Amino acid sequence: MAAPEAAWNRLEVPWPASSATVALAAEHPAVRCLPALRQPCAIARKRLSGTGLAVEGRVLRAVLYVYHSRLLRHRPYLALQQVEQCLKRLWKMNLVGCIETLAELIPK
Image 1 (spheres, rainbow, N blue to C red):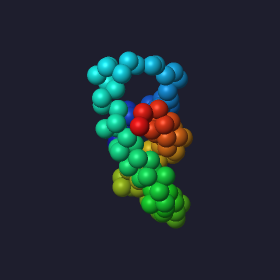
Image 2 (tube, rainbow, N blue to C red):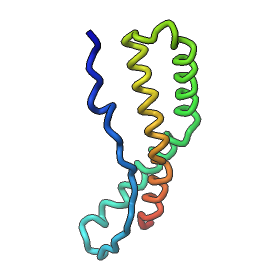
Image 3 (tube, helix red, strand yellow):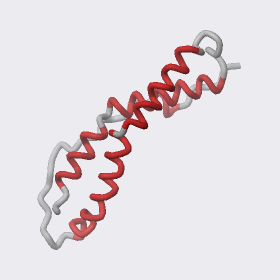
């Protein structure tokens, strides 16, 4: 009996985007929270654009390629294929560009 495919793996993940900017008054409560967002944006951008994630993705693809014929229906192999699919979606979403855009919009 085959395991049912996870529902989250079948969904199309929407592209993150900022289609418009809205000017806020300086007294708006959200403006006080924006400077606190600058450091998490920098950390996320550094981790996503660093070489570590890209190297791990290449190693994962190499392992999947080498063991494809031997472990085609093996559960851990199928789980690794799902991880590879998530990495593909992550790169397709261009999160680094979106985070950079968000960081540019935050006032200094």
